[in-house]
Length: 164
Image 1 (tube, rainbow, N blue to C red):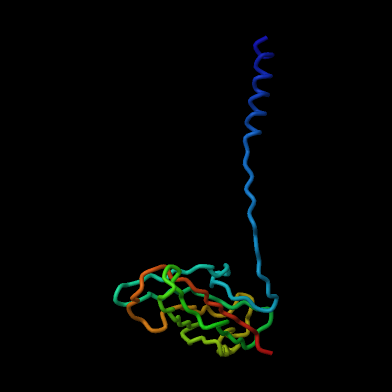
Image 2 (image 1 turned 180 degrees about the horizontal axis):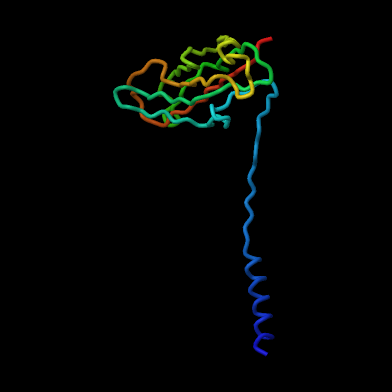
């Protein structure tokens, strides 16, 4: 008799537990270029945001990430900047822009582009694990004190293209 009273109570408890749920929808994006990709050295995506710390009297401290170029066919590559990168003050529009410098593997990168040779990128011709690791470094073009306080923001567009 006690069992008959217990069964409906258990069924009601199970139904009430399953009614308490949450759903989270996650938008996933992928930018695909079947010929070439610039990723972190471990094969993960480059960070979309990098923070440059400010050291009073010295300026912005460089930020860097270790990268590799992945490709379907070994060839020379050209790396360039989409535009000359600058940081703009989001709070004070009168503050001057801060020009940035970019290096890849210690070589300055500009909007004109720099050729990276296949022999240096892929020693031995093996492309399966990507190029040799290269440090992508972003720094204040002319280090020094910044006189206007505020939050600065800008985009560094790095373009890698295989050479024919």
